[in-house]
Amino acid sequence: MACQPSPQPSTSNSEGDLLFLLDSSGSVSYYEFSRVKEFMWDLVQPFTFGPRDVQTSIIHISTTPTMEFPFDRYLSSGTLQKAIRDTQQLMGDTNTGKALSYAKEKFFSDEAGARPDVPKVLVWVTDGFSTDDISEPMQLLKDMGVTVFIVSTGRGSYLELSAAASQPPEKHLYFVDVDDLPIITKELRDAILDVIQANRLHAVDITSSSFRLMWPKLLSQETGYYTLEYAPIDDLARKRTKQVSGAHTSLMLSNLAPETTYEVALIPESNVHYFPPQTTRVTTLAEETSPAQVLISESGPHSFHVSWAPTLDSVTSYQILYGPLPGNSAKLLEVDGEHNSTVVENLAPNTTYLVTVTAVYKSGKEKSLSAKACTQEEGSKVRHLRFEDMGPNTLKASWDSADGKVLGYRVRCRRQTGPSSVISVSPQIHSVILTDLASGTTNKVCVKPMYKNQPGKRLCRMVHMQPATEAQGYKHRQRA
Image (cartoon, rainbow, N blue to C red; front, side, top):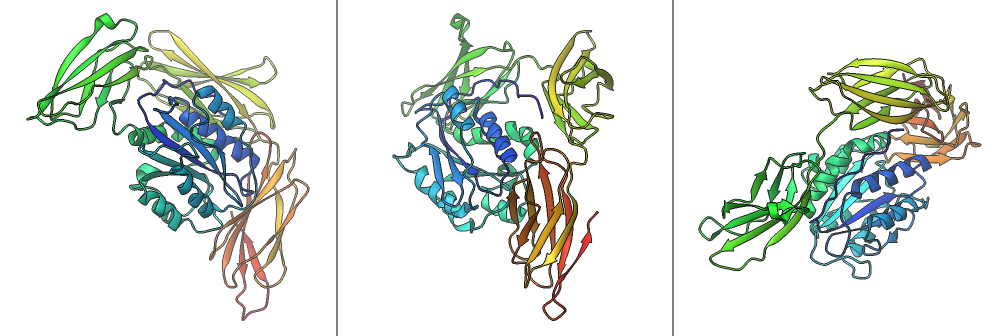
């Protein structure tokens, strides 16, 4: 489990209705649902909420779509964070198409708190599976001006999802494991900001000493010029002024103080029409230090992978101190300053570790950041996955239980022809019925145990259904 992300600088001067399409169906485990909720909050946490800023809502994908709360209900970070945290999984079928049609109604509904003339953004987090068609309702949403971002945490079809997302797909479609969602948070947030800030003065490329201002084209070189005024909000007497040609729509401001909020005003000086001034506030970042983020991944019973960011030329080495919790024993690894990851080995299974990464700078100063990591239970993998013929196009998949305190099992069937399916069952159940397996096809079946801290390792088999002209039944072989 990775450390909590550090607080993000507040982002103001953004206006838009942001809707999350949340897979709340039975195809999603409780663990995955919880991680997606954390991702949603991390994504919107820096935004300023209000009737002239960002408003957000959630629609559940289930048998029947449901709106968790209207856009205009939560207009502060604190109340919205609690609302996201309290959101409960509904279970049921994965009727994404029906949820998209419902979203189209709510995106333009006064009753749902939506606003008529602001950018509309849809963020759909999916495991790549839907029981109904999504292409038509998704196209209707895009035709009505909604920008669609898709985050696939499963192995959905790239062709289908790239057609569903707004274009180009490289800016609107993300494939990532549910445990690695924090990796894409900033990139997706910036892409959303590009949509909801497009018609207002705003800042991009913010660093500790500079930022670039961008604004819509209001003038031309022949019709006027712009006056830009900026100053720290706690010392407005230090106001500085710049004049920019009417042909420009951006300007880089540099030599700024770190961790300082600046008041910025853009005054169009037109010889044709009056344009009201536009204002924004921009907070520069703290001076860059490392590590700013620590991530834990690839956890097994006796090892896990530790990575950190950013890597800086001013760092000579990194020290990784790790030990079990509770306890006061710890071991130390040292890594060259050019590297940003290592593998920690020879660990105890089913144990929580405190991992501290310390950057040693050339100047002699040090900076540390910690994260918790959990090793998997020993043998956290199902055994002896087997199949039994239950009639035409139907099999029974059975397995022996995994070790440790299993919270349930997740069974995924990827059909050679037809849709994939995911079934979640309780820990006492060790078999499921798989249907719609066409004769003559080879299908992949995977079973994964779910634990409190993280999922276990999956066991997969390829199952071949005999053609109808041959003897009834199937063949299966182990997949390495």
